[in-house]
Length: 446
Image (cartoon, rainbow, N blue to C red; front, side, top):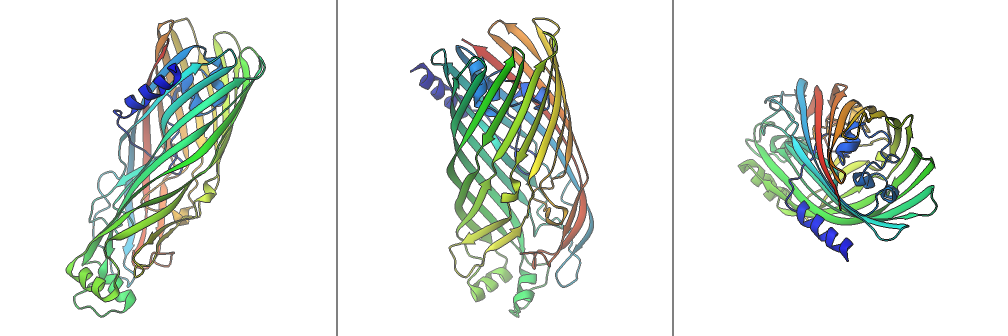
């Protein structure tokens, strides 16, 4: 009974926490724990230092007796500045407009809350609410890449009840159900002048690049998956972890709204397209496999490492399907690749009050140069992290973690010959991207 009361309290608190998203590998977010942040999430599947690690490996709950509550808030301060080298229309004219504004990235606050309860000497249960996927970008409405993107906002809220079983003194196993609610909003301009030209409609006054309309797609969906984990302790202080998160298939359903110019209204009347209609988008949140190790060299000093694989190759395209039979599918090719994440970390505990952490990581981007779009100007990044813990009492403490992410410059090489790009124009340039992440966490045992 107390476990379910704890679940309700957790859900009630989460309802009042702000949500957000920032740049991550693809559109995944690792920002689930200030403790893990301090080590760049090295050892995330093996360390199990507190219950926030259930987001990485549910088997780690067996290391936390009694009842525990934890709440994390992570601020992501991102920068993405675009520099144009080419912006031309399908017919060869120049696309007017700015470089998108001072910064296309959207700063955000990502919450995570956890509750766990020991049911018996061998059985443990927990529940978490996290934001494991998300993206956000925003440009000036009249920028040169407006036909590709103006605003992108996607976020997933993941409710994850789990159980863990201590099968032997050394081996623990765990698993749970992922209840994922995803909602998204995408906007971009529509070049009705180029639409007129490509379709040879002969509408007067339809000058390419000068009679724009506006399209807005919004939808949501609830879907389900699962996660599994195992933790094996060879001896006190030395353990390995293995975890799996399943893919989750969404069909985001909502409405596509068009805000047409007078030329757009004429084209809409002639073709039957560009009218408000129900729309849907298939979206797969990819599965992942991760493994980690945690080893205490001394009672004060521990080292850890992590490797993770994510099946981003499931993201082949973004295809918007419309109930309006006169509106053809809107397709953006992706052809993403599977990726690897590597991290190493170190934790030093000089006394019973303070703990200090540091870590390094390399996170590979799934996006090939030829298919990068302004919606997600992602590239490979290198993590440098540090953090710490202050023990308030024997049952409560604060954690903090900070990471700076160094990105490669991200090139943009979009062409009208690309899938779905005939009316979007040619757009080339590069992004200078950087991200700072600061997480704080409070933990209470009772």
